[in-house]
Length: 142
Image (cartoon, rainbow, N blue to C red):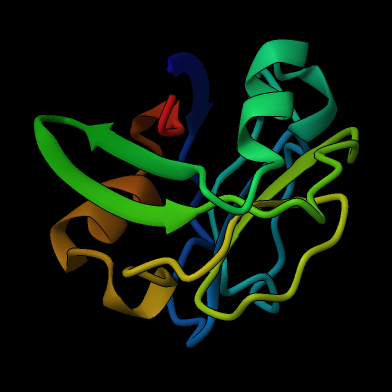
């Protein structure tokens, strides 16, 4: 079984992509320099806005999540995992984590990329305000 969702957000001059354990997109439109995990602002969806079927699929220990980030022709694909502990109920944020910590903002755990390891060209165009397309592909063995 496979379900897709798409999120559109944009860059911001304060995007630095330096966090060592996570990256995040948010519906919030402002960003301070302390938000060094945030790579996209003004997102058109938070965790709670994702479809019920998508959220249910990802809330399974056997689920995987492929996240495709695309901005100005730069593409990065991230592999993460779902968890039975996921609630995906946060109204504004989505967080990908290297660890297995789960809260209402968590969309992926065990992620093979974090803000610090994302391609620097991607971070550069996002800090210049580029639009970011986030394609989410959740799957689970049948």
